[in-house]
Length: 478
Image (cartoon, rainbow, N blue to C red; front, side, top):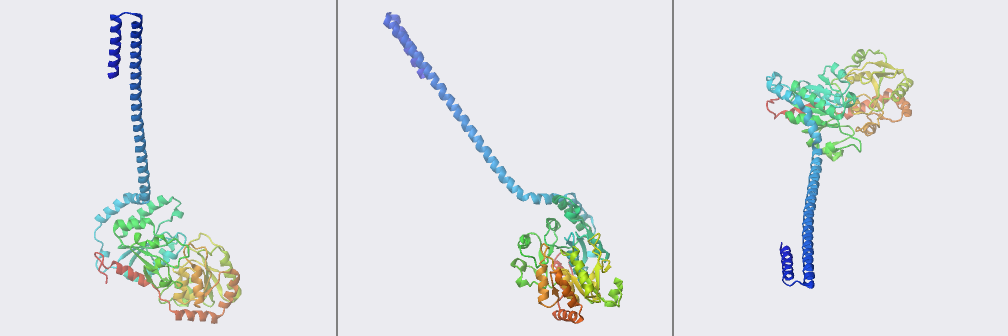
């Protein structure tokens, strides 16, 4: 504005001079002054306009930069929130899995009248849950606890083992739920279905505790136990192979209320990994009955001739592809007069035919222990400890393909203590069987087993479960 006034004033003065003293030079000077004034005015206007435009552009750039920084900040915040959300995805999925079943369970618990079976002095109800989609180890151990606890525990078994019907036929309260592999569904869908099934079982059976026997605690178990306020006990077999994932073992308090470790001939508490020591340990567990069924009665129940002698050949859990069984059967037949007996597995729809007496599965087969002169089996937890609890000599072929169970170490320990013989070579099996054909050899091992006097810890597990419930509301255990 000031520049414009200066230019206008200069132009007015120049024109006034020209008007009062008209001469060629004055006219020239006046026109020149006017032109200079106009040029100056134009320059000033252009400079002002340019400066204003630059200021506007700077403000716009600042706004854009601020917007970019804000967008980046929001993106970073979003990424951070996303990472935090990822940590909760599994929980969210598991939480949503309860769905309608959670509400149904809560409603059913409110609506159901007081259960007379859970009054003072009654045996506590325990829901046993097992893994074992293709085996019997876990479900057999739970059955052993129930068998030896007798009327002191009221137990129901929810199992993933396809042998559920075999165990149920023996009089146990067993219900089956297909494993993820058997069901053929995604992990997330299976987890939701399993969570709902657990809630339904809790609503219908109304247990006071959940006991899980398996090598990995399913998140559904932890969620349901937390939801309904029940203690969750992990019945966890030890003697795990080197390299096994110990994440849950190290952080077991994040998953379960307590841990009970069934002892193992080949692993003492003080020799176990440190993470295994912080648990309740009991003696080795098996279904072995007390007392044993006499030999004559066992043979009659199996439909076998009491005038003959028999050896049980039962290879599975990683060494039951047929070749080892065939080699064992042939070795027994070639060794002498002892007849090999093969049991049809309840886990297989069909099995290879062997030159041996074949019998249908009987559960628990350990009840018939007196029928065998010796056994040829894998070195699984149940096979070894059932023989040691019944005094039956055994030849053990350990599997090297099991995921967690260190069968090699167990079989070698049995051999070292003179409680049986370990061989992992089918070519050597014939020589070992020929040694067992001698009654003196079998008597020597039986005598050593009797001296060793391994205690069955199944009853003690039942006691530990009951004692853990002693302080709970309504619990008045005799």
